[in-house]
Image (cartoon, rainbow, N blue to C red):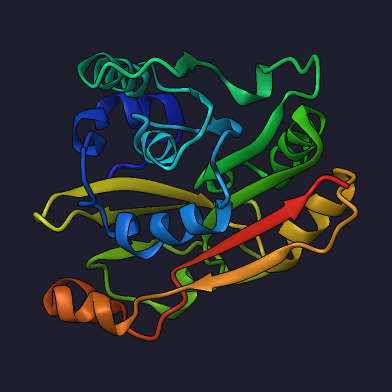
Length: 253
């Protein structure tokens, strides 16, 4: 597998494979429904979706009653898909902008909720802390920050590829800040490339602390359940009892 280190190029190349109106990717089942529930109550919230991709999660939040969703992503083609779907569904209360989070200027506290679905696995430890600082500044007092990442242990526990894996470089500690290329499959058999700049569990807590979050985060380890396996044993079965993702929720106090 050719490793594409430029995140923008990676997602511009495969934007079509990410575009969907219903769950199809593994993480659409194993992560996104849980994270959406974790964000509740969503009704009447102003939300920033960082690394929004083609807008799937933001559209689900609007269905749940969000007042407005601003989506930003580094990939022009992902944003093109998001804008096309906004027009197709006549969505009025969403904006989508091509934006590199590292270049985002922060002017005021304006969001009730900031969500980052699988963003930090593309950022170094230093970039993760910097981004968390910006998110803190963008949140209203009492606002919530919710994010998900690949579980830091998954790459070291799962050696076969299908339907989700990362190619490990180094060990759990010696591999910190090293890019692990990987793939995640859709249920129709199409695989898309993903990446993880490896961070330990402690790294995420340390970044939150350094970014001035004072509250204790809620932390969840996401995995395949019996309902997933009943739905599609061949697809979900290889992941039974493995830690796939982690979800964090923390309030700006």
